[in-house]
Length: 426
Image 1 (cartoon, rainbow, N blue to C red):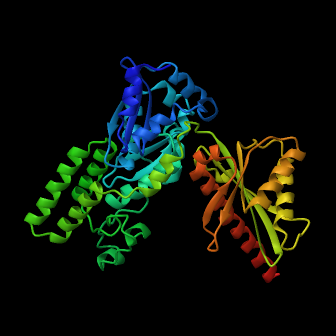
Image 2 (tube, helix red, strand yellow):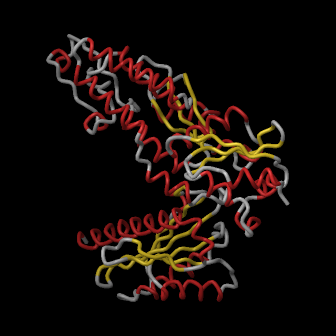
Image 3 (cartoon, one colour):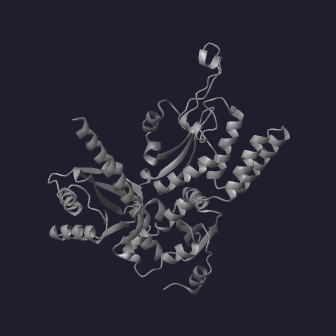
């Protein structure tokens, strides 16, 4: 099916993070990122390709004639490079796989102290949405993306912000002798400043010039220009040392070390389980919460394309109070959910518990004449996931399964506590 050259290239791929490119001649058909280039690219040639890949990816695999790759030092850098190359080359299988307006972008505003935000493509098209979220007029100086997966980008931004603290919503500090607070030097730090994620824009601890250097570092990072970024940081470190600002120099030294030893475990987990190329796979997760059989509630949470869709979460107050019978409560919740034929059906159902909970969900599906696979998450004595029961081919969505399950537990406990508090007050 594939040429000897292709087979040889696949066998010689490195077991390192990076970006891979499926090409036809000089045309790039698809760009993806990987924790392990070898494992990820090999996964495209599994026997169950039709079941686990989107139609666009399947089509691409019948057209490509070459595979290229770029190694990176971390999964985070692979994520950023992937977005940079997708924007540059606009491969059909990337851009058309998902509504372009729902992609994620990192934007930097054009201000004296620029803000850094993650927004949707639709927010870039409709300035009034972003304007409303910022609370004032703005102008975008830079945008980076598209990033196909919002939850991956969210994890990435946590790392980026630790490397390069930035302003998002706080107000820059301006000394005003007519204002008693600023005249006395009372500068209230924002929450992010208190936890080290804002460099002190709100407290006057960083000048416009020094903050501009920080923003430049962020720009270089999202442009995948690590070589120049490292060179910039080394120069800044030497400049601080020369004027005996040793604390500042030490901070940059630490940033340089972290940049070269990025601990992106969350991204590695994320990256491994999104090998399907199907960004719209929908998972519904269910959980029950109560205290000694009182105030029994159930919830449904939704994860679609790797993202928690909180607007589609649903709460169920149990009508037929089952006491401590979780499976009976689960049966009621799931039956009520399936009655809503106007809601999009899931591709996979996840339930908290073991074989009993899995069996009851499968029984209800059979009674309704619906064929949807069910997975159950078994917990240990500390309520930590220890096993996932069900068809093993769906373990490619392990991260999404665990996310939906964790969200269901959190949402159910929150709803139960709300009802319990209301009962106690009543």
